[in-house]
Image: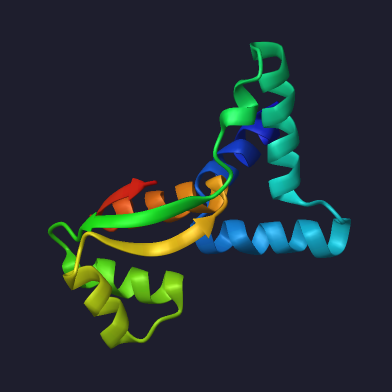
Length: 126
């Protein structure tokens, strides 16, 4: 039982980069599509609730509302998450509110949001 609690704690503390690597491993080595599994779980729960899953959004935009107090950390993180150059990442942060990523899955959007908030940014999902 303690091993499962440790495992659960490790999963909860994964960074966005580590979650993406885990998703790739699950897909490539085991044939498991994490996003497809999440949709199946959501659809199963929504069927019992009366069709709420049909109204749930599948694509989200991650919008940076403000950089907060540690602007440099947010610029570095935006650069890492988007693959942009330093100048472009700084431009996105300076022009807040600005869209960081468009049309991403709910899981990815929430991961991006939590990473940016940990760096001190104010983020909104649309």
